Length: 342
Image (cartoon, rainbow, N blue to C red; front, top):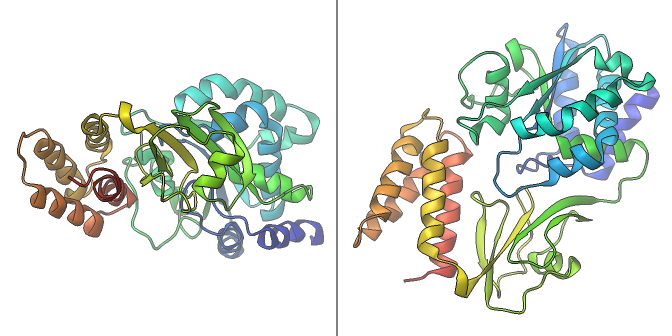
């Protein structure tokens, strides 16, 4: 017991936070789940490999290159919470990840160390529509529970009432990878960054977890020699920054997308975001469902009412049920305030 308890102590000491974008302390989530399991017969674990944010490549990298470490993180979780308590462990993967990596995952699970664990593993393929919201943890719980693909009201939190109303732990693929490193005393306080857009060296890089945009660009030898701006966090759910604002930390899902200012059509970029959010709204709340539609409709007009446009963004930010609608507001407002002040 002392050995498994030490894992939670190590996670807390390492300061691990969720890598899906919310940065919720991993030790706090694990402690909540453990507390719930004391009074319940069974619980579930979900490995979130949905990765619905366009442009993010870190989970794909881990499933392809660090497969056993990810599985070992799941193994350590099962050990800590109790083999008798965890009824099932779901690998919730987007279609491409299941197609490309499930065979390798199964091969590793079939080895001696993980053979008992493999009996609990079930693969669950994320629905392709709506794609984006199906990566949110409570939407994942609804999908696995054969309910509508939409987020749940919290509380109760998943660690208290999740799949089939049983305590459920949902952690990102990168989180389980980090837990494996922590368990082996190899965690160096790093996280994975995806570099994309107009850069020389695209890909996934392991760097210190707290870095500014400028530091990430410099550390990956990607600092542009042309007039540029960046988007951080995600390709549709992120913040746009000018080249003189790069002291800001990289947050969210840790994407840094570089845009060549002279070659970027801001109108087309805005249209891409609005079309994406309209298509990906789960339809649960009118603020997001109707707001995203009206924003796209307005933006297509030659001389649209800019104050109405801003009012709709404010409404999305203030009244959306989940982070999807408010994310659109952050993205578009950062373009209006930082890049295109017309």
